[in-house]
Picture 1 (cartoon, rainbow, N blue to C red):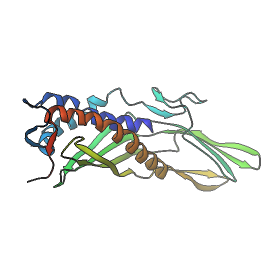
Picture 2: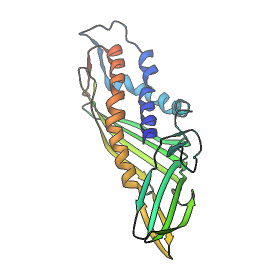
Picture 3: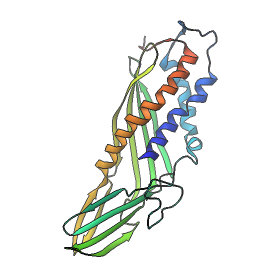
Picture 4: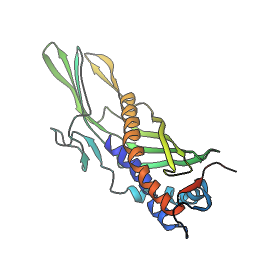
Length: 248
């Protein structure tokens, strides 16, 4: 789910201009910038970041993700080269080529809370108008298979919401943003597909566990690991080599 990483990476990197603008005069190595706390430094920047999210993300997220060059071409631009999902059962064969609608996003929540130790709890909720998926399902008896459906109407519905909660610790010396971890990653309502095979309705798969598992792994290994270093450099540039984490 590279597009998810792109979204969250952009959110974190978007803070760069704000950090740079508020450079504190007189910073030097082995000094503390007027005992500025991480909370005091970041809090004034959050409203402008929330308001600028649509403009920041415009043109950066692909329309589609999956098998971009297969037999059924997705809306462009698209990222990926393999099918999203394949499965073969006793009576069916399923293939999910790609999913579209990824760049039509509404941000309902972008919230940061600080605990008394200065750690941050970041909550981001993004709502997608529609996520049509290209799905092919064949009904099979032995080696003989016949097409049951081949469309983008079976999955995945409208108004899907992705909510990610991440905890980022505060350390008094660099790196200031430390020990990042994803607390939860949820998609609501569930992403599933039901097809009619030989008169029986079969819930052929539930994408939600796979989706959230991939999301969590990618956020932890890519987004939090590779972008916080950039933000920490900006914090050192503005706040010196020591900050205050705990609230008074």
